[in-house]
Image (cartoon, rainbow, N blue to C red; front, side, top):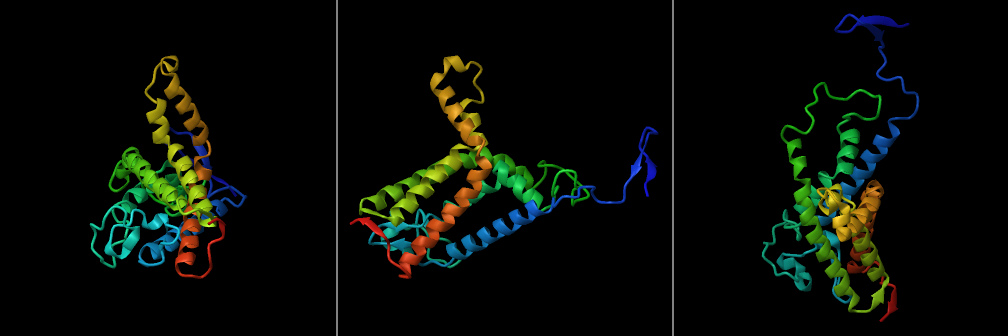
Length: 262
């Protein structure tokens, strides 16, 4: 049974007691996102604080979770020195992980994903917000979402380091580990370059594309990648976990690397 309620201005509208009139499984997408992100964060957190099984010296395989490796535990993996102490709460890549976390947290897609799945703000279209008040991203801590454009520059530097790691591992020959490292690097670059900030940097301020043909072509390339930003966000979570797990297994001697050359 439907009653009526009066809106400001005197017009009547239906007073519906139901939270939403949607009859589809609108809750499934945020639930899957919640489970997927929670599983990945749990795995990554455990791995960065294990302090072992991150480097295969024979093939120069270094997991991206520990790159660049900067503590004395790193051994031969410390290509940039060891300025960090061996403290159990300090990850080996403590100087870069915060920037990677900031880049992902402030990413436009991830913001949508965890706003809907963790904060229920809102959980889906035509479903009321789970919070009584909404202030957008104008207050602490969400105001720091504006730092995304700066985190992008740090992500580019870290992607260059990951590329160097893959190139260094390539000097020992070719194995399955090399293939996994390169696939991960390529996907990371695709995700990083598909970022909305990168698209704006490439051509967001240009008034006449005809006067900047090189930047226009790069902007066009980034724009095409940008349409796949959501998929690339999830793909890179998968390639990061796969790369880390494969190198962990090699370092722990659970299995051997499948060598193609050497």
